[in-house]
Length: 230
Image (cartoon, rainbow, N blue to C red; front, side, top):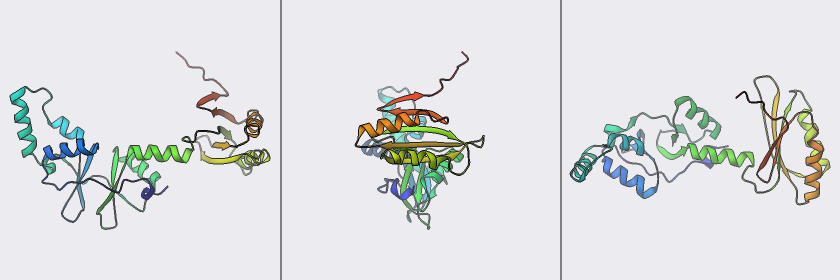
C-alpha cells in the first residue's frame, strides 16, 4: 500500500517563529494534534504536538494566572518547544514501511516529504489503522472471515482456495505470513450473493484441520478455546 494513497496532503504547518498560542488555536480550529514546523523552503525542521503545549502550560490557574499563561504562550515560539529533526518518510514509500519506522522510532506520526525533504503530507497512526482495516476486509459489512495455520509447503493455500472456488464464492482478501514456528498463518475473507453457497463453503472449511477461527456478522468463533491460568 502506497503512502500516497493514505496520507493527508492538505497539511497545516507553521514556521519556527509561530507562537504557541497560535499553534494551540490551529489545533482547536482544525481538530488536529500535531503540526509540522517548516522553514521558508517548506523543509521540515521540527514537529510540535498539542500534548507538548499542554505539558508546557501550568495545569492549575486562577483568573489572573490565566492571563499570564496566555502571555507566556504568546511569547514562546514553536522552535523553543518543538521536536527538532523529527522522523520523516518519503512519499514514495509504503504504509508498511511507515508503520515499521513508527515502531522503531516510537512516534505516532510521520511528516511525508519529497526528494528535496519538503513537506507534502502527513501520515498518522490513525491512517495506518484505516489502511489495516481496508486491506484486511474488516470494513466489509457482509461475508465470512476464516483463519488457518498451515504447513509452509507448496499447495496448502491453493487447496483451500480451490475448495472455495467450487462453491462459487468470491474471495475478498487473502493475507499470509510465516510465523516464528515456520508455519504459515493465512486469513481469507469471502462472500457470495447466494447465502446458501456461503453457508456451504463455511461448513466445509470448518472441518479443516488447520482452522483457528472463523467470523461472521461481527461474531468470532474460536476452534480451540484458550486455557487461561488465572
